[in-house]
Length: 495
Image (tube, rainbow, N blue to C red; front, side, top):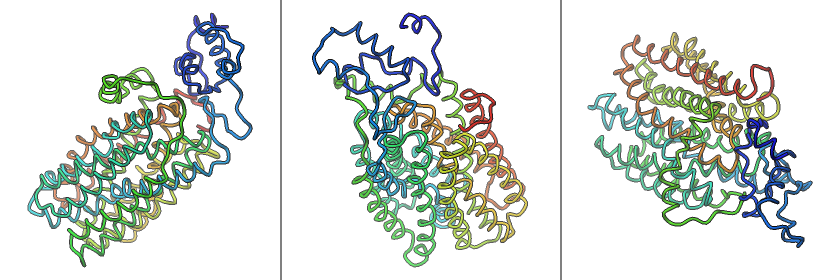
């Protein structure tokens, strides 16, 4: 049996190959039960017999692969997940509050950007101001790389505590900013990096408790915190800008951020999947500094490569569109208050989109099928509704409802797509890797988008921006389709 396995090509087992299965030595050393497919269990058992002394005592027998208990759900990645999952839903509850400000503020970034462009930095060009939010978006995604690998090895508590301190402190500093460099340091660097450090543990901990058949729904529920924040913050800022001013508005956001993240610190807790390998200080430094970015996975796994590219273009289209939607709306004759209201409605319907997409993906259609469809619809709605009717009030209400519903689903399914093709014990680093690539790409896409728009007064340039965002959405759908095709082919099946 082992000779056949060693000489043959890697055997495809759903989303796993032989090389992705933990070594028998690692299983024995850790005491962790591996419950993969029978052929792999036999390989692990035979190789274990060759590499370890035979023993008849009970301790030795317990190291052999066993079958899962009736109270657990065995997934195709070889890990057990609890069936009566109260602890898992408490983690989802905590992640909901952790992502409420972490994703909620990016979802309402257009409200902050419009305020800064029209008031605090009104004498600065749009392109220059865009660097504040470009750096913020880049770091919000790319700095997850530092917490992803740490989370896989050590858990969520330390990175979430560091992220909380950075996020709250940066928002308090933002309240006093008047210069471009001050906005870059406080909001772009401080709050961006702090949010990223929270993101990977919050999503990763949820993945520890739910098998792939339930994971999209669980992540959708947790991620809906970002949509709640997406309509909570614009509604709050729309009033507080007028009554309290910019400084106290940002302080109120900081206090709300602190409240939410404390709840997350209490409830978000990872599962112990295996024993942690002891490492020297130098080995840990090399792991976190040089191996956090999983370059090998990108160049050796085409599914993962196309998934990363799909993430890049999906996130780019919805984040940059959200950043400039209210700005373009104001430049087309609407008041700031009404523009903020459009953003609020958009994010309200995004909550429904998150829930619906997660349930549809888990129960009937699959994550990749849903996200491909959503990307195409988002691109079409940009071209058919927003571009020709950007000055029409009724059309913008319709667009806010449609776009909000579908972009909420995209936000929810991007991490779920990653979790479908990677092992749960490497999810933190793989998730962080794809977002680091996306974050670096934002450094190019955001200034380019700003250059297309200019001062927002030229209708032709606004149309060019909308077409550009639509093309990016189509590219996102294309790369997700390629990742799906490599995995399951052209068949019409749930995936």
